[in-house]
Length: 346
Image 1 (cartoon, rainbow, N blue to C red):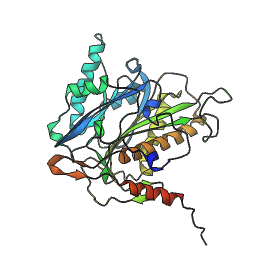
Image 2: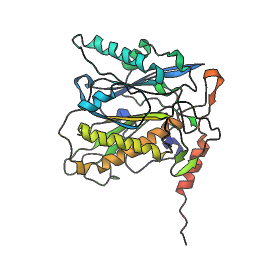
Image 3: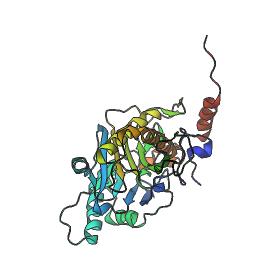
Image 4: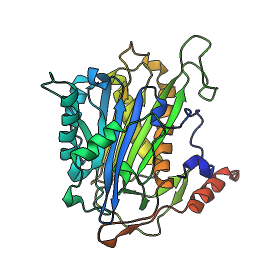
């Protein structure tokens, strides 16, 4: 059983989660993963598959630091449109994954002559022999065809099999928040009195960045300070809220801000990206109603990042290198410290 932050008594923020506390709480969003965990190879593929994406969905990309490879990002920004599933993998496998995604899409649309595959990455070369570029077309197809609306596995799976963050083993993490428009953000989820429906922000992350872990305001320095190559993070946000591409860009930028809440140092060699999409084109909500959406984004991203660490396990990979998982007792100690009443100042 994978351990999540809430299993350790760590609750981020005040907004309610979705039923699964995962990106798949957003209706129409599925996730599939293929994992390669075999000695020198610790890598994989994570696929985020929205229903109806091939017809186009409103979307935006935000770049915190552009030291990375995010295939298809410029067209998403130019048109405000996502037209393929989103794949995550290891750095040098991005291009093979993009080609495999094209095969998958062309097989389903014999008339297509132009497609914009979206594939992101982080560098898992500390624990995996990245130069072997082990991702094949079959790995990608397996991730896509296995996508489901169940809660995705977290930690050392899929594109997170070989990733590390904040001095510890990390991986894939997910979380969600319910957004209650026009109401107190801490109110119960459901239909609002004025008829405005509640919506969901769902997040999935691939954690692989440097800094010092921070849980509820308490720093947890890693005893083994190894900074692997890469130091990046991919953040995917999905929502069923009525948002247009411009507003989704604002949401994506807040997702990058959330990295700082858990201790990212935003290193110069880091590729920090957020992709946000809505599950349908609808007239957008007023900008003045975005405050709870921003809050939901920050909370969900922070919790997804923490889940990517608590669910990970100590891993030995390429050339016998080992990256240790964060000891859960350090997380609970930080939780207990956060619960202590603050002492009054003189």
